[in-house]
Image (cartoon, rainbow, N blue to C red; front, side, top):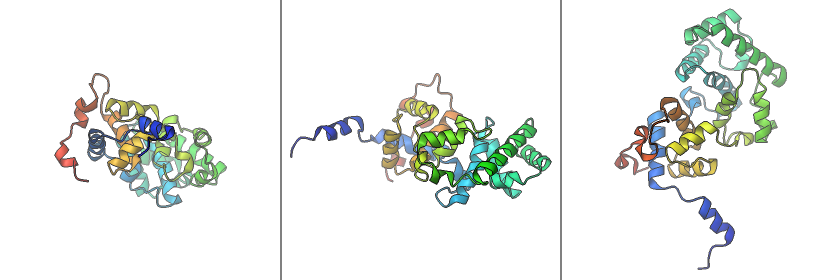
Length: 247
Protein backbone atom coordinates (compact mmCIF):
# COMPACT_ATOMS: atom_id res chain seq x y z
CA UNK A 1 0.00 0.00 0.00
CA UNK A 2 1.48 3.35 -1.09
CA UNK A 3 2.10 6.35 1.09
CA UNK A 4 -0.72 8.81 1.54
CA UNK A 5 -0.71 11.70 -0.90
CA UNK A 6 0.25 15.10 0.58
CA UNK A 7 -3.35 16.39 0.75
CA UNK A 8 -4.49 13.22 2.52
CA UNK A 9 -1.55 13.37 4.93
CA UNK A 10 -2.28 17.01 5.77
CA UNK A 11 -5.95 16.23 6.28
CA UNK A 12 -5.06 13.51 8.77
CA UNK A 13 -2.58 15.78 10.53
CA UNK A 14 -5.04 18.62 11.10
CA UNK A 15 -8.23 16.52 11.51
CA UNK A 16 -7.37 13.67 13.92
CA UNK A 17 -10.06 11.20 14.82
CA UNK A 18 -11.84 12.15 18.07
CA UNK A 19 -10.56 10.30 21.10
CA UNK A 20 -12.66 8.25 23.48
CA UNK A 21 -12.37 10.84 26.26
CA UNK A 22 -13.51 13.64 23.93
CA UNK A 23 -16.52 11.63 22.84
CA UNK A 24 -17.47 10.82 26.43
CA UNK A 25 -17.09 14.45 27.54
CA UNK A 26 -19.23 15.64 24.65
CA UNK A 27 -22.02 13.17 25.44
CA UNK A 28 -21.84 13.95 29.13
CA UNK A 29 -22.19 17.71 28.52
CA UNK A 30 -25.30 17.28 26.37
CA UNK A 31 -26.86 14.58 28.55
CA UNK A 32 -26.28 16.61 31.72
CA UNK A 33 -26.89 20.20 30.60
CA UNK A 34 -29.12 19.73 27.55
CA UNK A 35 -28.87 20.61 23.89
CA UNK A 36 -30.75 22.93 21.57
CA UNK A 37 -32.82 25.69 23.17
CA UNK A 38 -35.37 25.45 20.37
CA UNK A 39 -36.20 21.82 21.15
CA UNK A 40 -36.61 22.64 24.82
CA UNK A 41 -39.20 25.22 23.75
CA UNK A 42 -41.00 22.60 21.66
CA UNK A 43 -39.78 24.08 18.36
CA UNK A 44 -38.45 21.86 15.54
CA UNK A 45 -36.71 24.09 12.98
CA UNK A 46 -36.03 21.05 10.78
CA UNK A 47 -39.76 20.65 10.21
CA UNK A 48 -40.91 23.70 8.23
CA UNK A 49 -40.74 27.48 7.82
CA UNK A 50 -43.37 28.13 10.47
CA UNK A 51 -41.13 26.49 13.05
CA UNK A 52 -38.25 28.72 11.96
CA UNK A 53 -40.44 31.78 12.52
CA UNK A 54 -41.36 30.43 15.94
CA UNK A 55 -37.64 30.10 16.68
CA UNK A 56 -37.08 33.72 15.57
CA UNK A 57 -39.27 34.81 18.49
CA UNK A 58 -37.68 32.25 20.82
CA UNK A 59 -34.15 33.32 19.86
CA UNK A 60 -35.09 36.97 20.40
CA UNK A 61 -35.91 36.16 24.01
CA UNK A 62 -33.03 33.72 24.59
CA UNK A 63 -30.58 36.25 23.12
CA UNK A 64 -31.77 38.87 25.60
CA UNK A 65 -29.47 39.64 28.56
CA UNK A 66 -32.09 38.20 30.93
CA UNK A 67 -31.50 34.69 32.39
CA UNK A 68 -32.36 31.88 29.99
CA UNK A 69 -34.90 30.50 32.46
CA UNK A 70 -36.81 33.80 32.26
CA UNK A 71 -36.65 33.70 28.46
CA UNK A 72 -38.06 30.17 28.41
CA UNK A 73 -40.84 31.02 30.84
CA UNK A 74 -41.74 34.17 28.90
CA UNK A 75 -41.87 32.32 25.58
CA UNK A 76 -44.27 29.78 27.08
CA UNK A 77 -46.45 32.55 28.52
CA UNK A 78 -46.61 34.23 25.10
CA UNK A 79 -47.27 30.92 23.38
CA UNK A 80 -50.15 30.18 25.75
CA UNK A 81 -51.62 33.56 24.79
CA UNK A 82 -51.44 32.64 21.10
CA UNK A 83 -48.29 34.67 20.38
CA UNK A 84 -46.02 32.18 18.67
CA UNK A 85 -44.16 34.29 16.08
CA UNK A 86 -43.05 37.88 15.53
CA UNK A 87 -46.00 38.25 13.17
CA UNK A 88 -48.29 37.54 16.13
CA UNK A 89 -46.37 40.08 18.23
CA UNK A 90 -47.14 42.79 15.68
CA UNK A 91 -50.87 42.36 16.22
CA UNK A 92 -50.59 42.37 20.01
CA UNK A 93 -51.80 45.28 22.15
CA UNK A 94 -48.85 47.00 23.85
CA UNK A 95 -50.36 46.92 27.35
CA UNK A 96 -51.30 43.25 26.98
CA UNK A 97 -47.82 42.40 25.72
CA UNK A 98 -46.30 44.20 28.72
CA UNK A 99 -48.55 42.27 31.07
CA UNK A 100 -47.50 38.95 29.53
CA UNK A 101 -43.83 39.87 29.76
CA UNK A 102 -44.23 40.69 33.43
CA UNK A 103 -45.93 37.34 33.94
CA UNK A 104 -42.96 35.68 32.26
CA UNK A 105 -40.48 37.33 34.61
CA UNK A 106 -39.61 40.70 33.07
CA UNK A 107 -40.60 42.52 36.25
CA UNK A 108 -38.50 45.67 35.87
CA UNK A 109 -38.08 46.11 32.13
CA UNK A 110 -41.32 44.73 30.68
CA UNK A 111 -42.19 48.08 29.05
CA UNK A 112 -38.83 48.40 27.31
CA UNK A 113 -38.79 44.77 26.24
CA UNK A 114 -42.33 45.10 24.89
CA UNK A 115 -41.34 48.19 22.89
CA UNK A 116 -38.33 46.36 21.44
CA UNK A 117 -40.44 43.36 20.47
CA UNK A 118 -43.03 45.55 18.76
CA UNK A 119 -40.31 47.50 16.91
CA UNK A 120 -38.74 44.23 15.78
CA UNK A 121 -42.08 42.81 14.66
CA UNK A 122 -42.85 45.99 12.71
CA UNK A 123 -39.42 45.90 11.01
CA UNK A 124 -39.81 42.23 10.04
CA UNK A 125 -43.26 43.03 8.65
CA UNK A 126 -41.96 45.98 6.63
CA UNK A 127 -38.82 44.35 5.27
CA UNK A 128 -39.74 40.66 5.11
CA UNK A 129 -43.55 40.61 4.90
CA UNK A 130 -43.77 39.40 8.49
CA UNK A 131 -41.70 36.23 8.15
CA UNK A 132 -37.97 35.64 8.56
CA UNK A 133 -37.97 32.05 7.31
CA UNK A 134 -37.72 32.90 3.57
CA UNK A 135 -34.56 34.94 4.24
CA UNK A 136 -32.54 31.77 4.71
CA UNK A 137 -33.34 30.65 1.17
CA UNK A 138 -32.58 34.06 -0.31
CA UNK A 139 -29.23 34.69 1.39
CA UNK A 140 -26.81 31.76 1.25
CA UNK A 141 -23.65 33.66 2.24
CA UNK A 142 -22.96 33.42 5.99
CA UNK A 143 -21.44 36.94 6.25
CA UNK A 144 -24.33 38.46 4.31
CA UNK A 145 -26.90 36.60 6.38
CA UNK A 146 -25.25 37.65 9.64
CA UNK A 147 -25.21 41.24 8.41
CA UNK A 148 -28.89 41.16 7.42
CA UNK A 149 -29.94 39.77 10.79
CA UNK A 150 -27.73 42.16 12.76
CA UNK A 151 -29.71 45.11 11.38
CA UNK A 152 -32.91 43.89 13.03
CA UNK A 153 -33.95 46.13 15.96
CA UNK A 154 -32.69 44.69 19.24
CA UNK A 155 -30.80 41.80 17.63
CA UNK A 156 -27.29 41.81 19.08
CA UNK A 157 -24.45 39.59 17.89
CA UNK A 158 -25.47 37.21 20.69
CA UNK A 159 -29.04 37.01 19.34
CA UNK A 160 -27.88 36.46 15.77
CA UNK A 161 -25.55 33.68 16.94
CA UNK A 162 -28.28 32.09 19.06
CA UNK A 163 -30.64 32.06 16.09
CA UNK A 164 -28.22 30.80 13.43
CA UNK A 165 -26.50 28.20 15.61
CA UNK A 166 -29.64 26.07 15.65
CA UNK A 167 -30.25 26.48 11.91
CA UNK A 168 -27.06 24.72 10.85
CA UNK A 169 -28.00 22.19 8.20
CA UNK A 170 -31.29 24.00 7.56
CA UNK A 171 -30.07 27.29 6.09
CA UNK A 172 -26.93 27.30 3.89
CA UNK A 173 -25.97 30.68 5.34
CA UNK A 174 -26.11 29.36 8.90
CA UNK A 175 -22.70 27.70 8.50
CA UNK A 176 -21.00 30.50 10.41
CA UNK A 177 -17.83 30.11 12.45
CA UNK A 178 -18.04 29.12 16.10
CA UNK A 179 -18.60 32.18 18.22
CA UNK A 180 -16.03 33.14 20.84
CA UNK A 181 -18.11 31.82 23.75
CA UNK A 182 -18.41 28.32 22.25
CA UNK A 183 -14.76 28.22 21.14
CA UNK A 184 -13.52 29.34 24.56
CA UNK A 185 -15.71 26.83 26.40
CA UNK A 186 -14.67 24.04 24.04
CA UNK A 187 -11.02 24.75 24.81
CA UNK A 188 -11.84 24.77 28.52
CA UNK A 189 -13.12 21.19 28.37
CA UNK A 190 -10.40 20.07 25.94
CA UNK A 191 -12.66 19.75 22.89
CA UNK A 192 -11.85 21.14 19.43
CA UNK A 193 -12.44 24.88 19.24
CA UNK A 194 -13.19 24.93 15.51
CA UNK A 195 -16.39 23.93 13.75
CA UNK A 196 -14.87 21.08 11.76
CA UNK A 197 -13.26 19.42 14.78
CA UNK A 198 -16.30 19.90 17.02
CA UNK A 199 -18.56 18.48 14.30
CA UNK A 200 -16.31 15.40 14.10
CA UNK A 201 -16.60 14.88 17.87
CA UNK A 202 -20.39 15.25 17.68
CA UNK A 203 -20.61 12.70 14.87
CA UNK A 204 -18.42 10.22 16.75
CA UNK A 205 -20.60 10.70 19.84
CA UNK A 206 -23.81 10.22 17.81
CA UNK A 207 -24.90 13.76 18.67
CA UNK A 208 -26.41 16.48 16.54
CA UNK A 209 -23.61 19.02 16.33
CA UNK A 210 -26.07 21.78 17.23
CA UNK A 211 -26.80 20.05 20.53
CA UNK A 212 -23.10 19.95 21.35
CA UNK A 213 -22.65 23.63 20.47
CA UNK A 214 -25.57 24.68 22.62
CA UNK A 215 -24.45 22.31 25.37
CA UNK A 216 -21.20 24.29 25.48
CA UNK A 217 -23.18 27.53 25.66
CA UNK A 218 -25.13 26.11 28.58
CA UNK A 219 -21.85 25.14 30.25
CA UNK A 220 -20.57 28.69 29.89
CA UNK A 221 -23.79 30.03 31.41
CA UNK A 222 -23.71 27.72 34.42
CA UNK A 223 -20.00 27.47 35.19
CA UNK A 224 -17.33 30.05 35.98
CA UNK A 225 -14.44 29.06 33.73
CA UNK A 226 -11.91 31.29 35.49
CA UNK A 227 -10.16 29.39 38.26
CA UNK A 228 -11.30 25.98 37.02
CA UNK A 229 -8.48 23.68 35.82
CA UNK A 230 -10.59 22.64 32.84
CA UNK A 231 -10.22 19.55 30.69
CA UNK A 232 -11.00 16.27 32.38
CA UNK A 233 -10.56 17.99 35.75
CA UNK A 234 -13.49 20.33 35.21
CA UNK A 235 -16.11 19.18 37.77
CA UNK A 236 -18.96 19.68 35.30
CA UNK A 237 -17.55 17.20 32.78
CA UNK A 238 -16.56 14.41 35.15
CA UNK A 239 -18.23 11.25 33.86
CA UNK A 240 -18.51 7.54 34.45
CA UNK A 241 -17.13 5.92 31.26
CA UNK A 242 -19.03 2.69 31.94
CA UNK A 243 -22.30 4.56 31.44
CA UNK A 244 -21.24 6.06 28.12
CA UNK A 245 -19.46 3.25 26.29
CA UNK A 246 -22.49 1.77 24.55
CA UNK A 247 -24.15 4.11 22.05
